[in-house]
Amino acid sequence: MTLEREAAVAVGALSPADRPHAPIRIRTGHSYHVPLAITLGQRNARFVQRALTPLARLGRWGWVDSMSFIPEPGFDAIHTWNSVPLLTRRPYIVTFEDFLPRTPEDRRIAWLERWLRDRLVEPRCVGIVALSDYAVRQVRRQHHGWSGLPDLLAKMCVIPPATPIRRDRPKHHSDRLRLLFVGYDFMRKGGPVVLRAHEILRGRGVPVETTIVSSLGWSADDYVGPPDAAYVQAELARLSQEGVVHHRRQPLAEVHRLMDAADWLVFPTFHDTFGFVTVEALAGGTPVIATDTCVMPEVVIPGETGWLLPFENEDEVGKWRWLYRNAESGYLDAYHGATLRLADALADRLTEAWEERRDYQILSAGALAAARTRYNPEIARTKLETLYERFRDVLT
Image 1 (cartoon, rainbow, N blue to C red):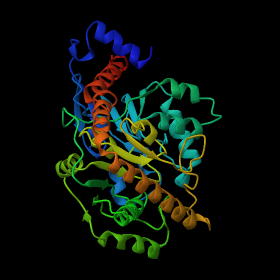
Image 2: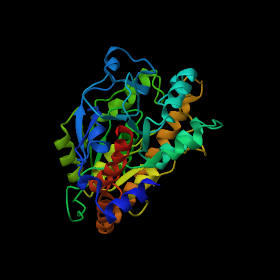
Image 3: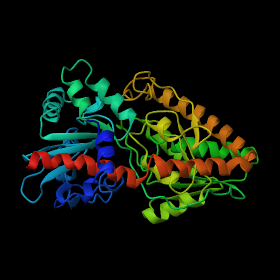
Image 4: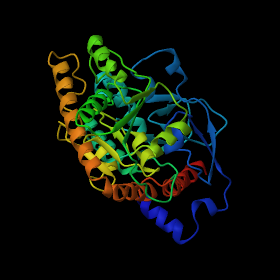
């Protein structure tokens, strides 16, 4: 029976939360993603939250976030983020964002991947939650040709992240073009695209104000982004141009305030497993302009919740053709060329948005509608409650 069918049956009779059972003690983590995708107030659960991968503090080993070491006791079941739990006999659920097991192409360990995926088709794994259809496509390609793939997919359902809506009416466009960019990995998430687009817009006489919230994270050996420090510094120098405000860090409440004050969240990312800030922006009625890559076409519906910028994707999964190729000689030229094209496309789209701002309320209303339906915490919570009831079959 599918999760949707189980939920429908529960609604027709008693919801999982109303059944006469004690709450299931669920061991989980406390990373940034957890309150958006796991701890959504499930009424049939009591969460035990502690770090799931404490070894991550000790090094940057490629395998460390593919598994969690969770010795017993103190809980009934486990709900992890991306990782396969070890050192435990308890049943578990995994919520994941792209690769599962989490062994991406730039740090893949074949034997470890095979060993962990075998754990996922065992009965102790009672369910797998993909954040998106993009994540499902990625898993299909990751395990193409493996005989156990149908069993893995049979356990899988899609439950997007969710966040509470922050307003009940669409917004009006402000008296200027107020843009917001939020992203730790500045070069991967398209920060230079935003700064170049800002410069183009000012040259056209558009009254634009751009706020950047980023610690400007960058590494020369990252899987996407320029490997050249001089190139990075030249792009960061654009932060000093007129009309740009940069915050290295802000508390979540302040980020939400900035989102609600902005006319647009701009997110020209080169790669993102989800892009949680886009969903958080929609919850405040702020439409999004993002790159047409990875999961973004699922979040941003052109003309409804925002706009998409054209991008060079491979065909099977829908992500940038140059991912994991930053050691190749033509990579920097590819990154730079994509940056220029995205900046031009973003500036053109924003110029048009400014000229047609009388229609802005339609997009703001669409953003709120998406937040109420696709990214509603109550809907996600009910699906997770239904999924959690599967634990009882294993625990009894």
